[in-house]
Length: 577
Image (cartoon, rainbow, N blue to C red; front, side, top):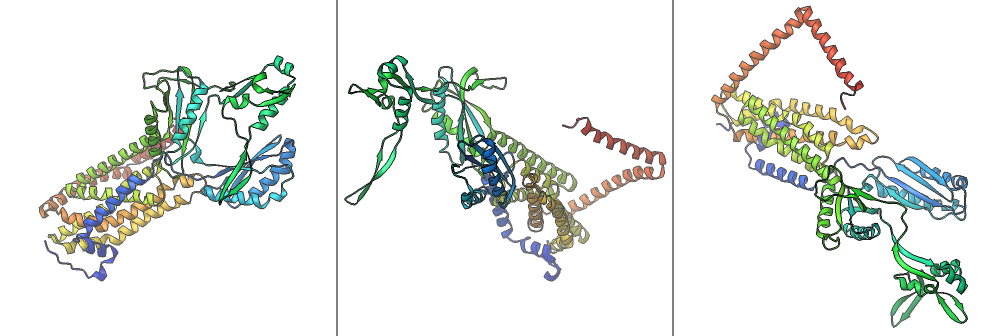
């Protein structure tokens, strides 16, 4: 094998210069493993979820106007606020609902707007126009909403021995523990009765002591407060002074004085029973197990509460869900008693993981299919080269997705699967041309390999940019589908550019590491010529009949039209779901 390099560096072009620099350089394998390592880091670090992340900020403004009718709320408060909100840059729609004494305005921003910036815009607009608010209107409450506010996991607590009030108290305690987990967002509890203080007055005692219900209500209401009354400074220390306190136990209410009769104080306990218990039932949550239940524990309508937890924007939904479930298992037997069952009634983390793993499996299958096809067509050595190049291209594309803030989801993995069929083209073109030039020269040299890459370099670059140019317009799609489908043009283009780099840097390097003997190249060439003759004979005989025999030609066209309309009819008959 000769190391002669026939071509001047000036004539090599970009492709030839890259190949000349890396074809025998030890930096090639170092760069290969560095890119492989970066790709593995990206694969581990990139968040996984079912669908791409889409930012569509929506902000609710709750306005209270006590005593006003719905028309007054709409005309005096809501409509002027609507006009103000519609002037904000980036606002797409403004909706409102007016009711007696209150109204709600929903501000929807354009797709892609950041939530924090949107909240600041709404808040600044409100503060700058408070002077138009009529007297009596309370300061609006701003509540942001986004797609990630949808819970990714629901946990249903149910028991055959505890009531819904006890389950709710347990659920609130459990929610506090789960919200400490990293990357969890808003959580809430559905179902169960809240535990409150009950005061059951006795009419006979009220009449006997001359106490009214209003007196009890006024006394209880005024006592359940805590006010800052001032500060005390002493010896360089400052102490805040508060008067009053909130109720903490039943005795705090029982010992309240509601009136005085004959010089004797009348306490709440004298005219009423006070106890702490769940409120009256106004809604119910029951849990049933169905055919999908995989445990031996069955529920037949037991009282239950459900804990719903969302994740933060940009976090790994799979990891958050797994951390939540792991924490629940840790709390069983400690916070969660043995007579309470925890059923997972929603787990978007698991569904995302299953779908992502299924697509990753298909990604490996597609890679294997391409490898086998190259092995069948070119031999095992080119197949090994392609097998080494494909993983580094795919992993570096995932690394780029991590850098760009994307996620591993169904759409991004579709982009990778879609790209596999075309990202190996560059490597195959380079491999075939190097083998062809070696056959022409009837000897294997590094100089010939470099010149072979130079020969197909510009056409390969042009073909790659043509594919990229076909993908890029998809990134200009507006509306909700724009960011949803964005991984296809972005990652597809990135994969093509990385595959082009790999074809000029890694493919020649690995070809020189797996150099086939000249005899093998001649056998491959003879095999290719035989296959070409067979294919030529088949297509020539078939196509010539379509041109020269009218019956065959018209029959082919009619069959083509019938097949087309039959395929289109599948949409009308809903044969295709």
